[in-house]
Length: 183
Figure (cartoon, rainbow, N blue to C red):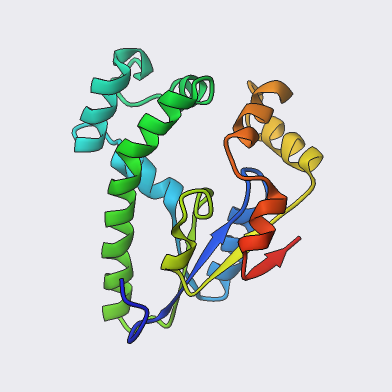
């Protein structure tokens, strides 16, 4: 999307568990439009969608819950245990998420919004930082990330959290690419 004649679109990113959603909530309370890539990903795999069909075709029915919906925990466990499968999932979901985000940016542009914040974990890993007017990176100590994730997901042990973090760019590398850093 061209960067002229439209509202500012800022990427809000950081490693899992760093507090991106908390920052987004504060911004929402101030009236800023915040789009969450995780929410768009959830919409992309709703039963009956093309994303759902592609995921089931790729990963099988083992990743479905009893009611036939995608079981995010089963899918998470599968893809973070196998880099190739994680990349296949990203190849399926990212184009759908990208298209939906463009539609929403356009919608808010037509409504006259001046600032949109797009919250997503993999902005820098996917090389999408150039799609935005700036990148706000949220960071925190690794120990805090592990503690938060284990409190949020009691089934995660620290080894699995390490696998998730290893799939993401290091905070040190992210800081080099960010426009602003919030510790």
